Length: 197
Image 1 (cartoon, rainbow, N blue to C red):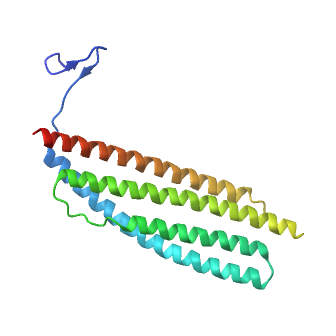
Image 2 (image 1 turned 90 degrees about the vertical axis):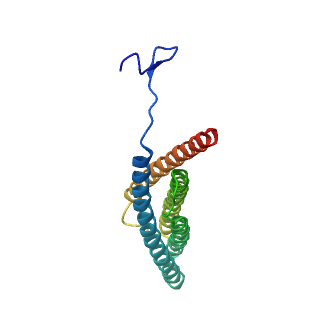
Image 3 (image 1 turned 120 degrees about the horizontal axis):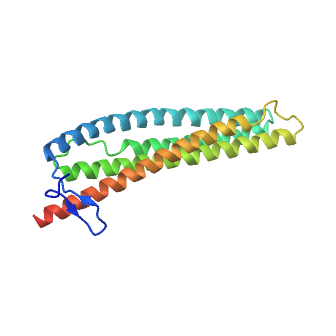
């Protein structure tokens, strides 16, 4: 970097302003929005089917638990039901915003921001589902141990697997929230630039 094209600030750091090719940025963002939309629709379909299956499994587990007086099944069935409801809510949040035909760069950034916010929300619901599974599993374990028939397996392995899944979902949530903030900042900067032009 030569002294002619750089701006030197008070700390001696060289800065250079760039003017990106808007056409290239727009085409890349349009392709990204297309992939993002396809993944969101796929996630919504899988999540919707999984949520319905979880609710069916929850009802069946509670029915077996009540009929057989196996109260640990009832607690686990209720926790699976909570997971089913949270999964359906996450699928619903992913399913919205399916439009991909946007014309301007600002609209593309706004749509990308909306999708990132929805994905962060879905990951947050996933974290709640993991917590519900852990709580239901521990309560079921305690109920079974209290009735005099302790389970053969310790809940530690399952809790470790849930902890890893929870950490992954938390990482995804934070990444999507960061992406939403970046898109919001870029959309605001672009709107300010358009207003000044």
